[in-house]
Length: 511
Ligand SMILES: Nc1ncnc2c1ncn2[C@@H]1O[C@H](COP(=O)(O)OP(=O)(O)O)[C@@H](O)[C@H]1O
Ligand SMILES: [Mg+2]
Image (cartoon, rainbow, N blue to C red; front, side, top):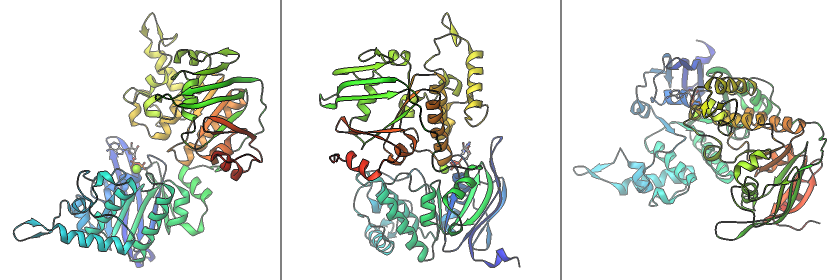
């Protein structure tokens, strides 16, 4: 007997390959999960994690390979087979019926019947409550799903799987939708389940969560198996490097800034919202060439309205916005762009990209009317294409050669790279980045931060708005704290004290 066979494995997947058309999503991947363990599956967006788990759950069929459940080779044709084998899965997007109660959702599809087929909701309700007590999965069995939080909906999905007898529970990016507190609770629940002998496979690309919760971690990269490690034996930097395939710096590397003159000059700006309430109040701020100025603040303190006023999406009520000495306030949005201000917007899907357009088209979305992309009203498709190919290569937008593909098919990280490539390529005087790394994995975050620092080093004035204080502290040269629509303090980032900034953000007085 080989040593591997002596261990008690709940799941073994061997030599799994999966093609979508000609695209190889998984290439000879293996996974061995010990019974009663919490096993993380780590990989960048698009690595093939969901695909591998969808194969285990019978949603997809592998093209090659075998699956062994509790020592027995199985042919998992569909989720019903998987459920019979004790496999449960909670998907990234929940599959609950909103107007139904928690109990009704859990019994859906497998109603307990008594006397000629009448559903016994009361019996299910009792059983759900037992399960919920046992694992700390507290929920209200009678609440309607549409009335409960996303974190609660996730508990319903977990209970649903347990109610169906799941001994092996797959959670696909369960923490992506949760608040920090809910994440803590979920980790606690996973531990309780594992203590009770259940096997848990958790998909994630968050390294901290793996360190906190998992016993083992299998890393896959672009469809290829990299390694399986004992989580206690590795640190976050090592996990990141295995995931991305190169050295990853989890801290930002940059030289000191060499700021020049103020390029963006905001003077006594007041902006009101649609209800006439002042959201930005007499705000003044200068961003210099060759510096990154970070705006730290709690969401809703005027950041959104400030940026919208600079972009001329909303009017300035009073005050001035100058770019290189020229007033741009209360002009058309195109005038902001023409003055040399480029923006990496907060909502990529609403403002940054047209998802059904191709990558090449999205690269020229602001400039397609200009030479060389068109002349006398006719698009020059060859120019548009070669421009796209150049930027795809230079900014490493994946997959290579994606110019003719619709943007919808790119991963979030690559959509963001596209926007950054486009905005930096405009060669602006001012580059505004709003929450530029939200939802991205470490490899892409490192890339975005590097791109901002490069823009700075080319002499651009970079204005960074982020709700992540860590990001503000790591990337900025100066930090402006916004509270209640005004800048309450501006500090040098080097040596700034996080607690002090946190206090200012919450409206505390500066000492
Ligand atoms: N049904 C499908 N058809 C075509 N391509 C797919 C399909 N599902 C996934 N892919 C592709 O397979 C790759 C892996 O996807 P996925 O398993 O969802 O990645 P992950 O979960 O690691 O982010 C991606 O490039 C994705 O675009
Ligand atoms: Mg996935």
